[in-house]
Image (cartoon, rainbow, N blue to C red):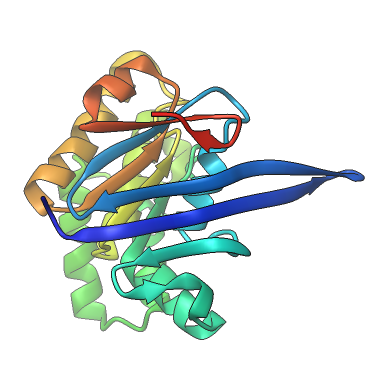
Length: 225
């Protein structure tokens, strides 16, 4: 067994929908080890994205406990949570979230610049990340000049350049055709095996679920398998 990366105990989450309150997660208990390659699976509305957002510190935890290594999220202030989010977690969004005014290189570099990483170190990380995802020679291209698969590679490179402990990906193949989706999953698998990065993703795509080492299934906000 590897070292424990995440531990969730009794995690509940509600979000407002008009005048209603949606009970998105119900008493979630789970653990994820370092260097695992894990998928959250389940139908739409099962709580996959909500759980990813809590693990990635996109949403605030209000009920239950989540720990990342020795950091217990519910005991930390916003400054410390922001530091964890910026330095330890790489997030890949379904719709890429790239800045169309920036080149591929600049999109990958952006968060490193905000972390005040020296220019020479930034350049090394960006070039290495772009090479690892197969985009060497595309550094000066802007998102509108790239295919969907290439945009997702830029998004992966952006997450990877942070040198995170974990990459969290929400439906990373949803906007792609099947062949391109397989290429993206192969990149994530290689990063997991060769770079030792923990990968946690959400998907209902059978191909994706067959590519990971462990599947955590959610139904109606509960872990069922």
